[in-house]
Length: 481
Length: 143
Image (cartoon, rainbow over all chains, first blue to last red; front, side, top):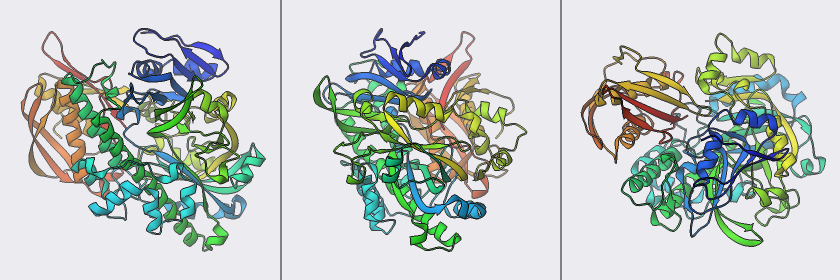
């Protein structure tokens, strides 16, 4: 089926309701981006999500939309609690994959000569790579504690402080986590991967604040020009992958047995009615993985602080590392929204999309009540990442959501082909970014040309009023799995 | 791994990666799919003899069986730290298979040669045979 999105304005496109779509689709993108989006199957995926029972408003896509599996990456969809569904594929395998940004008191000019040593030390000290296991070995009972208590478990073990929880989405814990619903395989995969970065697009970056767009909000976020920041991007590792896999298989089995009163355009969209026991079990398991991911990022932040204190031979006060915010971008959450002027409770799926609460929202901690929620948007390893602040239009148009990254422009095999006979490591170094990676192919797959222009993605959400630009961060050193 | 000829091609997928696999019959299709996935994950072949294990997989239809079968091999790596070096399907129906796999312990030396596959997805999954009786499958992985 050919889809022709209709341009509404400079950053919004409508996919009119057609066929078995229950709601229209809405894509946030500019003209140039839309020409590229139309080349893959992501708009078809926006359409497919619009056919799911109980979907409310629009099937949404953020400007970093690209072809995923089931849902598009950059997809947002909200479902009515009585008529709607939850879809494990609409959350993704890496449950609560997300970002964490830390500020420091360091200035780039002061530490420029030490960047290599910092990267080497972090590369040695932070477990990363395919199938990487951590320095922690959890017992099953400790793993249950992690799954129920999330980042607070890590803080109680001495990884960071209680102040960090204030600056973590949902205080680093989703309610309703129930480890008794987990498979033996999920438990087993979670035992030794806590405190690991993983591979692929996950990373830890040393950055310099390159540009401030909004001075007032930057001050509230403790950001200043030439400041050193640290960015972590990772999730729930094999624990989350297994939970998604287990429930997708169970939901597909139920569908094959005729246990669902609707048909699906794609088996990866397998789902269960939100009122069913199966949906409740999935959400209880998903919360376990979300909490594991928050604990994971909390632990990695602590180890990063310890490594930097040692390699820079400095004091905690001089380093001044503190958490700016932690956001997740693969999740399904029960949230309060207003639809057609009425307050409603909805199950919001964000598959490669970030929550973006506006100023004054009751879920914001006091420190960010006047600014809106910090929104962290990582770019590719060669260009920029951005810090934005959630804005009012996000609540009106996207269930409080905005983009989550640059979005891939090239497939991994296209990237490897393009990078053939080139040293991406050298090219990165020549452009002022020192990189260490565990996998031989990772740097080629993740080279800057493989991604869309992050500046355009961020400009669209800024123009659409979903979130406002606060600061731009330039990578200086990167570790990847 | 005993793979004599190219029995699969890589499908370009923006975020992830897919394969189109061929097989003269259903058994070889499933074996070739496993070999294809393992080749994508690891770009060198360890010269070792491993432990032989027998496994059974149940599913609701052929595409579901493919997802479960490849997922089983992934789990040996992710959950048990065992790298599968050889597979042989003994018996297969549309909802069940019995296979023998040979595994070796995964070592850190192998890590740099690996590409992570997080999962075998159901997205656009197909297992079909043509009029001449040859089998084809399309499988998309989450990387």
